[in-house]
Length: 207
Image (tube, rainbow, N blue to C red; front, side):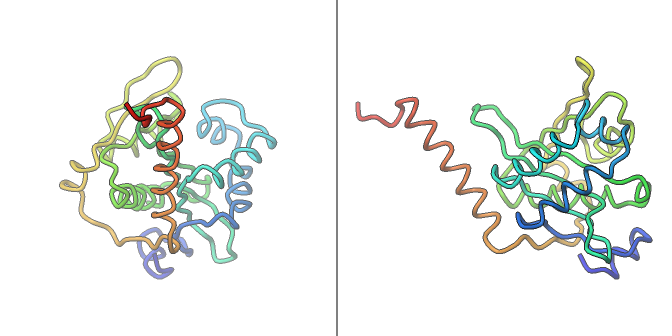
């Protein structure tokens, strides 16, 4: 999204766009800047520097799509992540969000949420899963705003978002550009995982 539009919507100058693998250190730096409470809420527990290093690297190798708020100096201060479903038949793609304290209550989280749902729809997903710590009131409020029905269990809140329902009830926002081939790459990655799983399980063997 263009800088002028972001400033008009949120009062903060910057750009919202997808983050490419070469920019993963910017995600790492953003997560490290989160205050202790925000970091605990984001990961639902303790996360030290080593954990965040590994987490950022993992995002670069597992098909995670990241939409981020870039400040004018190029640093990332908020991020929305779309994690692909695992190989279980009933698994859902999962979303996660993080916004640094100085940008909260400015609407940036809502913009990221809308953009991420549009990307998920473009990939053919019908539902999303969201998990957050029980004390993360801001994230729970944001999830509820977009139709998530959260339930509390074992110290965390989990819920699902029906993308078709939300497409009918929420006014569309301006779409975000995904780097060339990123969406197709994620689909191909999912297909490759399923093919490997089927081969290992013997489902594709001749009768």
